[in-house]
Length: 298
Image 1: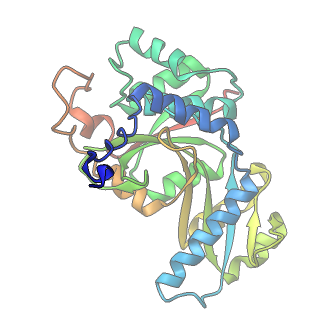
Image 2: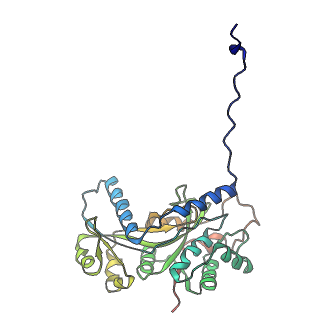
Image 3: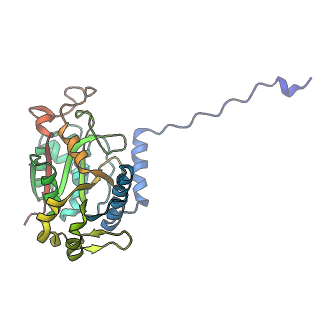
């Protein structure tokens, strides 16, 4: 008799070890050590490719347009817990001349002001007031009365924008009635215009070294002479978004982000009453149709 045939089969291998939440946070934070920060020129090139791929899908690949990109370099920070607004503000701090401003420092101030319990910020006004106190910058809550024009005007003037929206699984904007409310930092934009504005771009901005009809703004002050033309001629706008659940820049169509912002109506039903600080009137009065604009104090 073959004795080996009578032996029981070997035990299965042990299941893979499941990392704890804290270990995952640590892993995500550690991945940033090898992450190369994206430059404004690189953001412009990537934004251009995103827009061209979109036009291809729409059957408009042969369409001739010109493009202008502007952006700030942002160093990503991965959030721990529901601190997306504080992380967005901490990422904005170096752009406003403030170094070493951590989400924990912002959280401490927010708790002392009774703006938050766990790091959540369901009020644009709370985040604006935090920005002014912690960064000593000019901050304002901007109502989205004029929508796209309002945001573009602020970006063209060099403002840093903090925008609440519903985040999809890929961290881009979606519409979940506020159940996935999240904060993002907008660091720049890509504007698409028709070819009648090519001369303006050639006159004021730097041509890309690879992509035809793509121009880069390397100094926000160079926008001022042609701001009105850029606002009125924009046929489409991408914004460069940064948020605390990914180290990568998001390239989002502004119209989709505004639609997401406008749909912030209610806190998700899975959230227990008392877990968070909700402003009077709920998030429909705290977040819906609002962004926070930041500029350096004069």
